[in-house]
Amino acid sequence: FSMSSASSVLRDPTMQRQLLAMKQQQEFQANVAKFTEHCWDRCDVKATAKMEAKTSRCIANCVERYLDASSRLSADLPNLLSRMADSRQQAPPSSAKTIWG
Amino acid sequence: SPASMDSLSSSGVGGGGGSDSDKRQILEQLQQQTALNLIQSLVNTSTEKCFEKCVPSPGGELATSEQKCVSMCLDRYVETWNIVSKVYGSRIARESGGGGGGSSGISFQ
Image 1 (cartoon, rainbow over the protein chains, first blue to last red):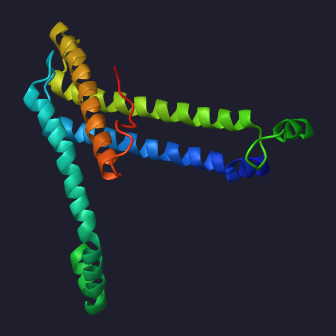
Image 2: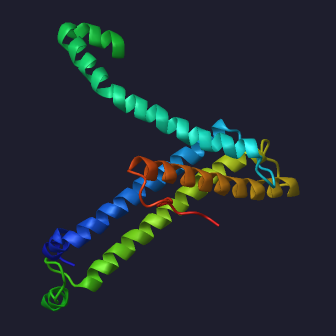
Image 3: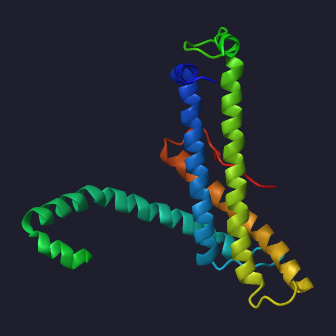
């Protein structure tokens, strides 16, 4: 399978659409894996024969609140970034070393 | 070699070289690899979590109670995964205009 035929396959719009869909699926699954691990710990899920109702509620809340916090953060990000740029212009290099050193 | 190049330049729909079957094959292989990575990730994480939970003091062998614990733990981990997948999927569907219902996730039975 040569490089030139590989690049022409990738130029196919149908192929690109499907690759994009697969990429999105992959991101979705990666996030599910991340939330599962995090919320398993947060909600102290027990190794019992049946999951308690309060535990399944906790897991659902855990995911929803994480996403809320994430949206909140994204909304605040432009403001935060502009403040970072301002402080970099004002402060001399040595103070940067103090923070990160 | 020229022979393999000929087989790849057979007619394909939608422009570009490569036959439909080649494209399908590539997509299938990518899909398989993705699914494998996912299972791998699930096994690694659940093993770690369930070992922590069920085998606090590793002894000379795994006690029957510990084995049962690990088994139930795995069931609960997969259940957690399914809850997360459903909630996250619904949230995405809601936020992208409410169309299409259901998650695009994989659910483990």
